[in-house]
Length: 113
Length: 117
Image 1 (cartoon, chains in turn purple, green):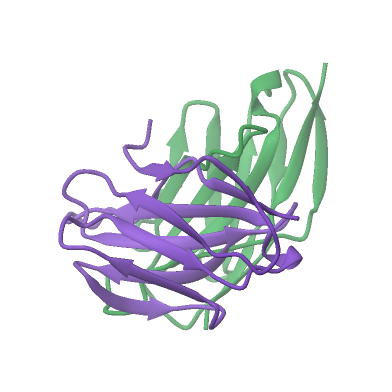
Image 2: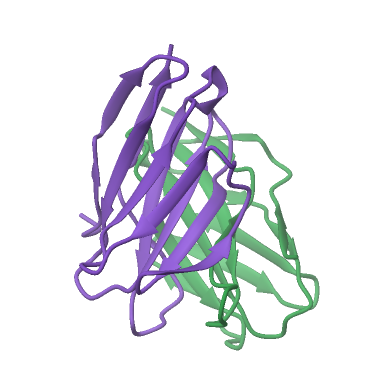
């Protein structure tokens, strides 16, 4: 158990809809990262938040947005969903003591029909 | 920008044998972290091993060890005494040292490892 919690684990929705994925980082971790993994692909970095503020942005679509709240949990909002958005979305966190690795949640599997 | 290349999309090994997965990376930084993550069918991302670039000694974790060649920008993973539970997708990843806005992990495309009983 990495200590990073993601909900929901599975989500099925239709094209054009909007969903919200939630992530609770490990206790005390200030940084949250979101990654997208399409079928049998590598992990693509979407966005990072640090203590409530956006810190780095990757290849995140304009239809996607994220935020980190004062309690440090984060949400990834995906709107106007397309079939190609079907993927596994991972949240990861890293700690105050910089040891290098990220700790990953179990992912949220999104299926867009 | 840093890039990570895994040139072996698939590998297979007989149970109890040794296998080596390759990874190369490109960076202009002198200090960084390298990782191997394992993704079994459950899809969970599990850290296998970590290497700090400033350490010359190769990291080892039980049956897993790395061959870190900094000048060649190579970071291979050796799995000894392969077990059925080692079957997974293995990702090599690079991370800059703590630096505002550049702390993400950059992943390779992965190597799918099959263990043959």
